[in-house]
Image 1 (tube, rainbow, N blue to C red):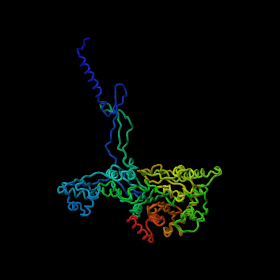
Image 2: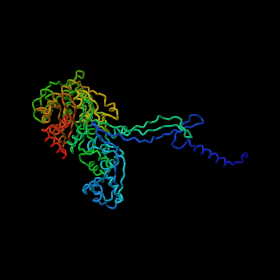
Image 3: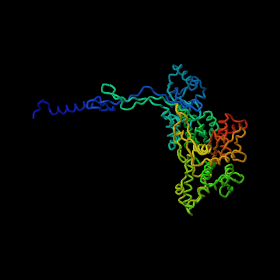
Image 4: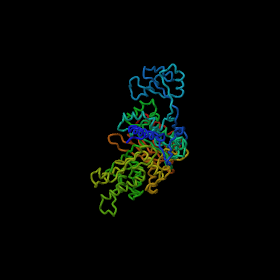
Length: 610
């Protein structure tokens, strides 16, 4: 049949393809643009419009309104790769001495003995940057740039302040190279990471529906309001923090102090300490490398992420549980039987719980826990195996109500849960369900399989100070004009009656008095009664660890302190003095003259790292 329009089949096929392409290339169907059909003839385009104003990141401010971190202009001076630079002349330009100039350049290199010509950036002050600009013609090989960056106005608090992730990329690369297997442990974004969204604020977005002529026809989604970054007002007292860090220095360990009435963390120290700007400063690459390679691993956030056996301070918890479950009473006496467990110091026979705590008698608490674990109720008849399993499970249930063996929800990333053993754990570890108390007695003195973080240790002491309740420890007391996150205002209770916590107090006060394990750390001379408990943790093959928890004033606690010093020896001689100095500094604002030599000795040890 002849085509009436005289068009060939090939021409008709081409026309069909062109029409199809024209339909596909409609301006209403551009790639990446969503459309919405409201009727058969009109199509609307869904657009997302970014508002031009950029929110400024919020500041971090301590409890006394001192600004600790803020976004400010940084001046960076990039040195040429070649030829070698006249460092003497550069120092004169910047107002630095020759030794300081060489050190600044060396610190900016990622490792020592770098080959010549490696690119280097130095951080300058505004005044130094001004001098470079004035003499730019004489130094054409130097490049000066400006950029906004987080600025630390303090040299303390690195482990809780943290850093912005995008400003720490150079550190991440170094960490991956030096400590590949432990990179996750070494990352510590602190509250900068935890509260990143609130600090950043919202850019602001509109979501209009527009037609092909650009006319708006309502919204396809709710608009996002612009919001400036929120300031974080911390619970930290930066002056107390600086003092506590000075006492920690290069030693391994931690100190956590908090207000038991609110759960607010007053100071948070992880040792060895370092300056917070080190992680993000462009000219601190060598310093970061040394931190990464340091045998004491200063970059680990010990109070939150490292769990250790608590030692004898855990006797307080075991005593409270034993009182609650009827395994002992406050007047229960046990002989200091060295055949059961050795006691590290001579003392009178403990005639009651107060004396057991005062002297930290290991055999006494061995027998406290034995009473609890070996008790066989009538309902189980002669089945001692089932009784031990049930009693250990019951003990664990009560201990967990102290906020241990689980993440408490502190406002820091990567909080560790700690660990409490279960009956099933021992079944597997011992290879039998017929394990006896003698094989798990180390629980009675806070060793063996028990592990607590520093935050959990401090919270444990706060619970005792409050006689049974606590607020989850936290670092931020106000977000902008609002209070802390809601979960930090929720009062939490243990499963122990308050009367049993009250029974612990006389023994904790006696610890700090004549004959007690920490009698030399008393603050009675300045009218402050301290309640405390020392701990010495066995460390196979190395020096023992020292621990202490306590609060003051004992009758109306305002501050709780938990200290853990690795390889420091006895808790009474190493951890307790450190703790009470922090208490006295907080409560009085100064250290009494009679403890000045004591203070100087601790500071000297801190500088030496032991």
